[in-house]
Length: 595
Image (cartoon, rainbow, N blue to C red):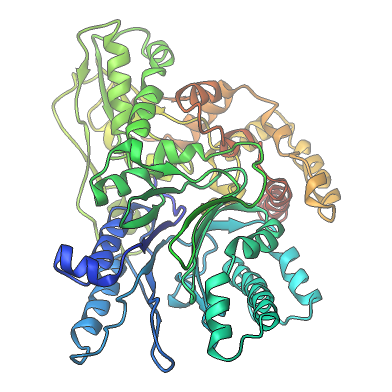
């Protein structure tokens, strides 16, 4: 499939023993920093636009820096960030504590979900104050659907936000609540007749970050894992109440660590799967300034909606359960594949699109072999070199882009053999149309069957993935084309007026009217139209596209029912409201112009 710019990756470490302990046991004061680097590299798949690191040192004196941050952009951002940090450490005068040597660490890998790029948008974000407890550093894997409403909330409180991005609004609202928590402790300290530095010590020792989260996060609608560090030594990671975005943690007597994916923690700390825990929906894992680990239910858990695309594509496939699920996705496509080739396994070669479809391919082959032991399985498609297409323009550029993949020649009998190739998903279809189908046709197969291990992607996402416009989905384009073919295009206007009528309603009252477009056709009709749209006119082979069913998805991934990309059943009200806006944008800016 064509790569999606998807959700970010997070990594956190809280040391539970003095820094001297780690220097003595592991021979280096950068033990935690080195582990953070490994955790981030193992999640590089989750963010290649930027990276950032934050750190807090628990013990300091006035005049010393105790919170540190470094950020960079680009695909080599992790290397750049850690190289800069290590240069700072190496350049520290003897007798001084180097920067980034502390007890709390935060790492972030960024993929833009808003189209905003540049260092200023790279996490973590830092809010400074002369009171240690009022300093806040946050990062996350999230996208909020109701930022406008929260912006108005801040304005109504008398604040003047300088930015309307979700991470900035979150930082300001959470920072405001953090200030109130500090002031609560200040009042308590004064009641105890404390003065001066004793007040500061009391505040630092009695901060309750759960209070901050309970007065901040209920205001937000979205999918998120929010992570934070405070200057007083509080660490937290909170998951949205529907469990849309993933978060896992590991703890022993030396440290607590948090990451977006389970195998990252297994590999980094050489532990078993059973030693890794998942943060529950609406729950926060907190390590307070005293090093005590707490699990606090901040928001009641909602309808479970862990993202199924994590299982299909986004997460690395070395997770034990994801490996099994991807194989199952391929295995249960056996029946529609056999129908597509007329049961002629003898004259069919089975393959896959590198690289995330490989595990589904193994499952597909195992499923076919259960009935037909002799299966011709080959690696037909290979990822070729990264071509420098930026040096050309127009048709020349498209021609170069078509050669990102290459094929293995001589493994098919021309005009006789079918070719079945499985992909993890088909979203836009651009790579299929511009590259894959063309190069597969060079083998002169009798028929090309493209198999998607996921269902048809029909709806935008608002919870951390860069899929927000209706024209990004070949399934939607196909449905619109079918309406035009059958002289039913007036339905598009009807849906537009229904979306327009609810644009000013509260999100909780909004509905999915776009579903009416898809309801006019069977899945098979849309699949046939997709194949027609994606097949270049010069292709000689017959082309068919086979999709996973929604039922098949849930059968393979029973613990991750979040399927809004495919079903339009959004897990939060904000999803329905933004769907209406997206459709109105399409109708006004695309459909009307094409008439």
